[in-house]
Image (tube, rainbow, N blue to C red; front, side):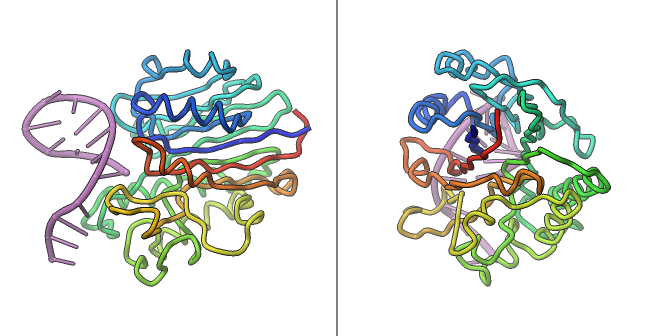
Amino acid sequence: MSFTLATWNINSVRLREGLVSRLLTDEAPDVLCLQECKSPVEKMPLQAFAALGYTHCVARGQKGYNGVAILSKLPLRDAGHHDWCGKGDARHVAAALENGVVIHNFYVPAGGDKPDREINEKFGHKLDFLTEMRYRFHGERPERQILVGDLNIAPREDDVWSHKQLLKVVSHTPVEVEHLGEAQDAGKWVDVTRADIPEGRLYSWWSYRSPDWNAADKGRRLDHVWATPDIAGAAHSSRILRDARGWEQPSDHAPVFATFDVDV
DNA sequence: ATGGTTGACCATCAA
């Protein structure tokens, strides 16, 4: 037995309801984690997804910004959420499957343009968010947990189109990569995507501002699938659905998939 | 150094 999970920054779930439905129909993951829903929960088109078999959902929303949802064909129990940095942002929600696997869905702050917290408080917020993740993960002995989402950082040199040209660009600066690595280490999280696909360039996001995103291919891997060591080895078939970036009126992110050979 | 695009909301802000 196994289950397949996907994570996708949808950039407005109301505007792109049709794209979500297409993904659910064509790819049929058991669980889909969405970020940047940009909607209160009561305005998310959850009935449309339920009609496709995704009858279970836990979500947190707010008007215009942020917003995270976990859609599932398998029964879910709401496993709570945390108000990171105490700002009231809908950037995290967690759900447990009946087999006890807990799925955390994160939307880490993008961090603004300038990678300097003295002049850009959004960058400070991003670093503080990652530090809080580190502290909350530290000392836990987590088992059967999965963490996915738009972490807004491309940590490896082959997670970006040009390591050298992005060293001072928010999402790939050394201080962000260090903060992310410390949070990852504190929870003993395994980067499932890179354990599965250790070699080669891998991107999940291409800017809207690039006129020919596919040919230019100036991408970054901002979207991640992590798992605790006890189940990370059960993961396989990781992939990024690059095609979705070319769908009509697309999100600037592509969905990331992984399958876990864990009984459900 | 600058501007390029998009979404939500309705003049800007966030990404």
